[in-house]
Image (cartoon, rainbow, N blue to C red; front, side, top):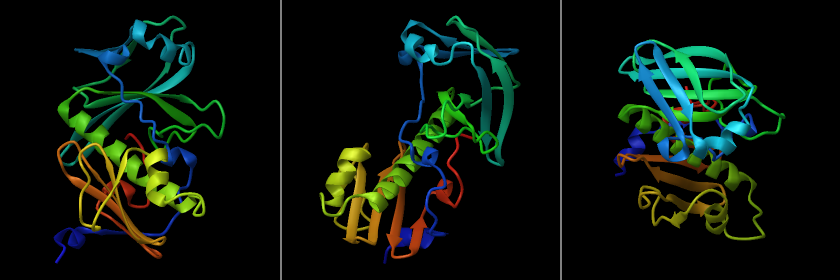
Length: 240
């Protein structure tokens, strides 16, 4: 008996609605990247240091949307603000209440084909450029989101891979992240790796682990898709 299978959520067989949904670039940044969020009684300051000089050149003088969110047992609360970013790298003053778990900044897409994560469904024309996880809860939420992108991106790649060119495991290992073969669909990969099991081209499972060791998977059996990742339940992946 496979107890994890009892917890499966059913998914409709739907192709990703946009390239932005399968990007593997989630810009979670911190002090090592030259980005800091300093909180105070009025809100906070998003600071861009010398290490973020290259990043800020793409943000300089642009209009941006910034969302800060707090997760709790009943769901999530967010505060949204619109900003004109200064031309000189430095600090952006933010205004919000409480202590957020995550703040993210997005700017309008430069072209329609630009691959980038969506911040909210209300801003489909914006690319998320900066994500700062302030708390342990925020870091856990962004880790889970990154793993959701891994599963969706791997599934997208398996749908499109050149079957006469190389084995699917080799294709995933080079196009998504370090990938290992799994002996059964209920097995788990080592931490930091993607796991792949397949019975045929239309029957396979993709598995990953969250930072806390929780197992997430996406499985296809013909036209039936199942997953225990709530973020993949027929909606666009977004930061908030």
